[in-house]
Amino acid sequence: MAALASGNGTIDAAATAEQRQTAEAAPIRSATNPMVTPLLTDLYQFTMAYAYWKAGKHLERAVFDLYFRKNPFGGEYTVFAGLEECIRLIANFHFKEEDISFMRSVMPTCEDGFFEYLREVDCSDVEVYAVPEGSVVFPKVPLIRVEGPVAVVQLLETPFVNLVNYASLVTTNAARHRFVAGNTKYLLEFGLRRAQSPDEIVDKSLHSHDGSSTCMDFLSLVQTWLSKLQLSESLHGVFGETNQSELAAFTSYALAFPNNFLALVDTYDVIRSGIPNFCAVALALNDLGYKASGIRLDSGDLAYLSIEARKFFQAIEKEFNVPGFGKMSITASNDLNEETLDALNKQGHEIDAFGIGTYLVTCYTQAALGCVFKLVEINKQPRIKLSEDVTKVSIPCKKRCFRLYGREGYALVDIMTGENETPPKVGERILCRHPFNESKRAYVVPQRVEELLKCYWPGSSNKPREDLPVLKIIRDRCMQQLEQMRSDHMRRLNPTPYKVSVSGKLYDFIHFLWLSEAPVGELQ
Image (cartoon, rainbow, N blue to C red; front, side, top):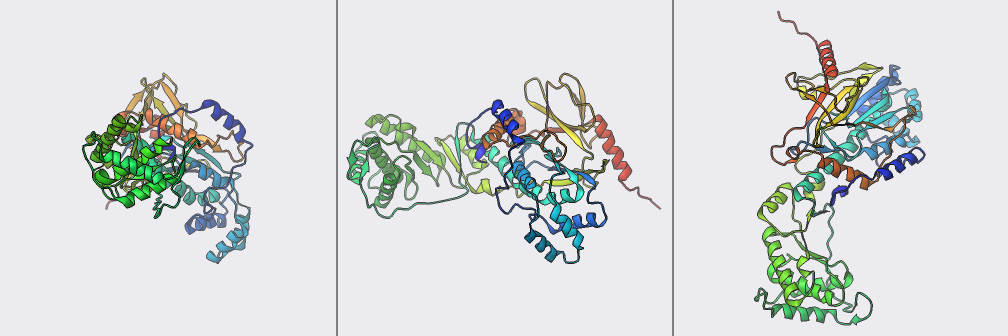
């Protein structure tokens, strides 16, 4: 989410190439969270692995797809995140002796040979293909494809789903808030809260910004400015006596952080106390060569208060000739979400930055993304999951995935093909079919074709390994991809669904396999 804090950017191709060259030799660190180990899983996964081992099938080559079925938050796009943590897990995947001892205690009826097998397990024969982290993704299209011995890959299901689910959900949530706020506003992550409440001003002295002089009684300078503001003609006697404990707190904080003085101004009364007290301290700092950071509003009518505060700042700049004071930063918080940001934009406001906490980090309106991890092939034999709910029917076999772009540069459709099919080509017409609805189909002539799945863990295949980019590159990719989406896919209300399709050959195969696997009823 920090990757979406502000502005736009482009991917540094040179930096990416340089990282890829060093990726082969560079060791991959362990997971950021020390709890992410091979034991971050369900007991079910170990019982499945034991069943494979007991039957002598644990080394059979399997292919699993990790994907989701529905975009979150009532929208039509998702941002993929969590890949790096998945790669860190498998790069350091092994069971310690204490792990083996623990598993013996919870699976006492299993044979000793199984635990000896677990001692030797790693991911050296596992291959991982994934969409680059920070990409905009859509339902049904694999985010990650995992190939390897079926017992090992089974043990990866729960941690992979866990690591991708929340990361993608909260990143999508951040992207949606950024979209509503616009690119010119700062977004601050307020998930963790801290407060500061100085009770007494001990040292009243403050050196000037350049160190050339010392103000021995900063509080008196603040009081002088407060008196000037009370007598100001342009402010028309907006306030009388302000709250002195608030003024003392502001002064104490400014003495401690003269370069970063940002005040919460709604403790008592925003217009009659908070803003005048802040301005008095800010003007005193200005006399000594410092520049206050701004104010924060955390309650009340945020649109109205921000407009009034801006008028106050502009009046002071004009009357007292303080350049830049009228552009003082105004930050707003107070349980902000997409709806309140949208409402503020419609009302009109003077807010420069938004602090978003509860609704961001808890993903308040969506409990989970709902990622699933489904077997699509074993021993080169395609597998399909059937369900009376067609949205839960899986798309079988090892696939290649492509994004097709139109003349205007926007993404038109994602298409999945069989592994050995001829890939889509620029300028050549291709039939794109809905996986399950025979009437939904369209020909597309792509102007650009992007293959989505890259190799991030080659296992024993000797394929080149993609780098794990730094956060800035991930963020830049995300912002770039969001810009390549049509506005009707991005809008908050009634967005147009993005098309996810399969090739004609894969469509025919899905339905052939479906009919082959589905039992035929008999009426008597």
